Image (cartoon, rainbow, N blue to C red; front, side, top):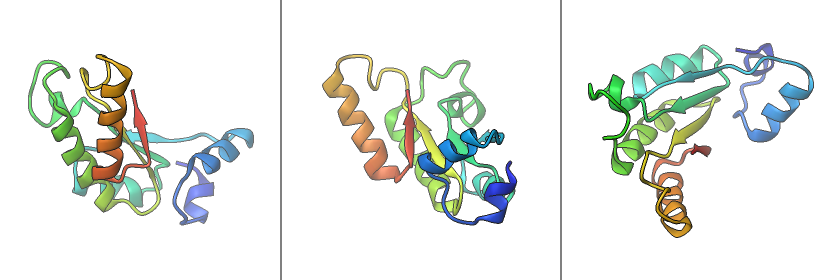
Length: 123
């Protein structure tokens, strides 16, 4: 959590993160999978919220992240994006959504960005 973000309620962007890094400011990142937690995290002034494929473990009780689907990641991404005003929202691309070939990866990436309205993706 940085004072930069708390003092400036504008949306966190890649450009703002670069500025923070250049000033030597710490950048805070937390994981959220749902609307309620994302709202709390955003209001606390966290810079980046990751919607991780660990939702497979935390939200669905799976032993690994492998079972989570692209549709499930989009669902969690949408829930988080609806809650957030300031933080940058990054959605994880689940295993198998980009490993096959570059076309498959692009299709998956476009779906996540278009359907969840996330700010960025994590491979």
